[in-house]
Amino acid sequence: MELADKAVGLVLSLISLSIFTYYTFWVIILPFVDSDHFIHKYFLPKEYALIIPIFAGVSLLSFLSMFIGYVMQKSKRKSA
Image (cartoon, helix red, strand yellow):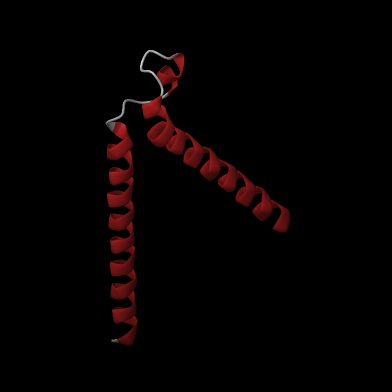
């Protein structure tokens, strides 16, 4: 099982690194490249550079809030 855990960790690390690299290039470097350059066809429009992280953050906070509420309700039932 230890080998499977390492493989999953490696895959998740590679996915995270690729997303970070893509987003960094998209937000920081791409605005300095001419708009008619071919590289622009591989990236989403600039508006999504804000929409995607905001949506992800709101989703994460919502999930964490629901999880914490669930755990608090469950612990309240056990103590009562």
